[in-house]
Image (cartoon, rainbow, N blue to C red; front, side, top):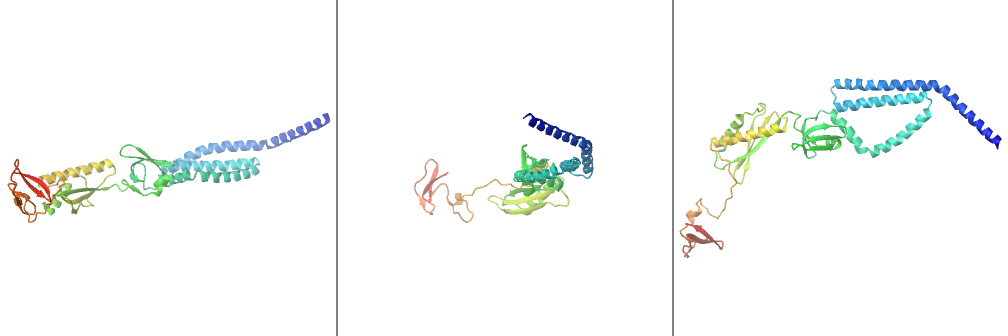
Length: 329
């Protein structure tokens, strides 16, 4: 048994000696690999700074600049790792690592499908010039100013101060209205005037009121005035004009000034903006008032016959469709 133990021990010693020989023989490779790794780390740090400066000169978005510089550093470090593994004569391990990484990458890609879509959507949004931070937009039934665009979502600040976080995929795949991109907006104001007013006069006064309101209206876009229909108590119209506006507060202020100018001009020229009116039609024809046809000192039935009931407490009694009514004297 002692001989067997001695033989096993000798095999262990030989194995350790072979390991030691491998370490000694591979020591230059270890040193070279360590040097390559250190140089790669230093180059990667400087490469990121150089890439960020170069991309910034091209006018690229900060989000895109950071993403591209990080991707460049990651590719450089991946190449450096491949070189180091070849120096250490670990090509077989490298092949196995690449195979494992491929399967793992496929599984991770399927699991993180939506985050990856949002990531690339954020990159595309940052590259495109249709919207940027500070623009007033409307998308996915939300209205507000773009506060931030990151690689996963877009943050919109609503006029009431709430932050709305929308995935980049939803913003990129949905219609988006940008109120800031063109630098101008059209202001529409609807109103109505009485049926008895002169419509030509109303149109001239309304246009002149907007022209003299002090608003800096775009000269290339004339003021437009259109009558839109016969309302229940008024003839309705719309007047619209263009103005250089990028902020919602400026839009509301211009709208308010225009409304005040119209009201003042109509008051000065005797033009009526009517209240809602309800007309009761008793079947009277010929333009006569009901008090002319049915005097208050008589009692009448609406079939044209006169009643003989007399007065009661200063009132005249009659019937409309079988219902009793009282008319004051």
